[in-house]
Length: 244
Length: 244
DNA sequence: CGATTGTAGATTGTCAACAATTGACTTGAC
DNA sequence: GTCAAGTCAATTGTTGACAATCTACAATCG
Image 1 (cartoon, rainbow over the protein chains, first blue to last red):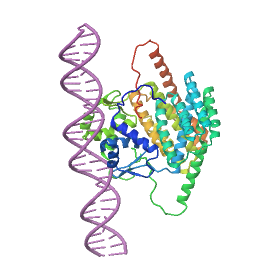
Image 2 (cartoon, each protein chain N blue to C red; image 1 turned 180 degrees about the vertical axis):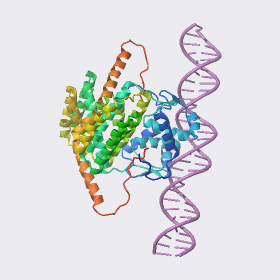
Image 3 (cartoon, chains in turn purple, green, cyan, yellow; image 1 turned 60 degrees about the vertical axis):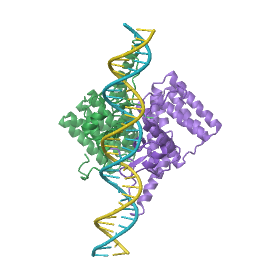
């Protein structure tokens, strides 16, 4: 996508590169949710020292891809329905904001970029290869976010997209109706190109309403099931919110 | 605010506590923007080892309170007008989302919490103490965010609020019209209590429109000044987007 | 005199040894 | 048999020493 720019040496330090490798492993599903991770074993596997590996693990913890239990262990998060609800609602909000900004101060270059990304999505759907469609889908949304020039929004969206990808891999929630894809995205693209900020925001925000509703429904069902049978389980499902 | 719960020993590891101390120092303005930080000196000052301090610094870097230049140095970020624009627009979006969710599934307890926070704001305004008003203001918004139960939104908002506080400290942008404060927040609170999700979102989102507009205006002026005098400066202002 | 190359000091990056903490297991008293 | 305290192995937390890298300055050549 953005490779052939120039072939420089990777001057980042070891822990960043170790984090890249781990991130790739996690997002590709090689490490399963709930799985425990020991520093010594992973460090040996990646052939770096424990200190370096710890720095990488902490970086991934900040990205929400891993959890730390102080003095005890590292482990991959387990996704509940409320996690899905959180991910999709937050994503909708950020994409809505991006679409609004994109529609507001769009330039010729921006319009070209969006149209190109949309064309890639159309071509991907025609090819009927699900993986390619998924990539083009993510790419289109990322393009919309990036042309806003809002660096903090871009960074934040990247982190969230990672968690969404992780969730999708873990829950096998990749089912898509290929025919709907194009008709779902076209109005968003049109609104942005037309400069209709309000419409763009609303369309983008509610773009994955089905997922949100499904997750919300499953969530209340989950809660009901947990509360209906009187006292049965004791441990509250601890979330990742360990940050100060 | 949430102290007297129980007086336990702080069982978090050293690097977390070191990060707390540093965060406090940064947010209180004891370290000025652009200032360089050397690991050895800071480690000696806090009486922890360099490794521990590095972990704390990296945590703060993830929170956007500090920047790292690989192999070279750590330094505090310098805020430009585009930073202010980014912070306030993103904050508006997140607060809008929070207000919408709060209005949608509000409970008696939630309504009580919001009303209490609003009363504290009113009382603070009556006292005419700016610092107290600022605290109550932040507290009200935080309350709205927290009653959504959306853990990722809560975490994200906390990080953003930190950066906003840092910006305010660095730019002395604390000027407020005390009389306006209450009349600005009342409609938001009312909309949430009334369950009017759409109105709550819009009101909360555009709540600090003045700041956004001021920052946006200053931003384009900044750009114009940088482009009008032909080629004069060379270095593009590097932003914090170092994360992979 | 200007540009390039080499060198020195300071600073960050990496590592492996040591300390602290945890959780499971064993032991013993009641 | 049950519960409590004690012990031990595994794991994470912390540290100081060593290596790699950067910046600034000095030396050298044209």
